[in-house]
Image (cartoon, rainbow, N blue to C red):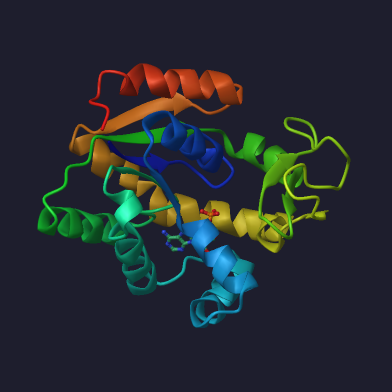
Length: 218
Ligand code: AMP
C-alpha cells in the first residue's frame, strides 16, 4: 500500500498517517518530522532547513526530494508507505512519479483532508508540542494528562515556532499557492479521495478506511 496524504498544515495529516501506517503495517514518512529532528540535532541538513521552517517557507525541492528518496530506499519502506507532507509542489509530485517509475512502484491513493482556514487557525493556536520527542497535543481536543507535560516522555510542552500565528498564516498562504494545485494534479489521475477533516480523529480515520479497505493490504 502506497498512499499520499494531502491537506493544509494542521489538517491532521500526521495523526491520520500514523493510524494508517499502524493499520497497514507500512512506513510513515513525514518530511516535517525529518526536518524538525535535523534542526534539533543541528545536522548539516538541519542548518540548511531551519530558516525555511522558522519562516513557514518551503525547503527547496531538490533538498526535499533527495531526503525523501533516500528515506523511501530504506528497508522498512519496502512493504509500503504513507507520505505526510510530501509532495508539496507539482515539481515534487513529478519527481516522486519519476522515482516510482524507476523502482516500478504504483501509488494506490491520495487522501485529501479538507478543512477550512478559520478552523485551522483555531487548531494551531491550541497546539502544543513536546520539545524532547516532538509528540503533539491540543489544549482542547487531545490535552495531555498533566498540563504542559508530555504524556509520552515527560518532556516540556511548547508552542513550536512554526505554529506561531504569523508563521501559520504564512504556511497557509504557501499551501494555497504551491500545494493546492496538487489536488487537481491527482484528481486528473483518478487517485484522489476527499475526506472532511473537521470531524473527530476517529471519524476521519473511519472515512479514510472506508475508501482504502478495498485496496490490497501488503
Ligand atoms: P509540516 O510539519 O509537514 O507542516 O512541515 C513543517 C515545515 O517543514 C514546512 O513548513 C516546511 O518548511 C518544511 N517542509 C516539510 N515538508 C516539505 C516539503 N515537502 N517541501 C518543502 N518543505 C517542506
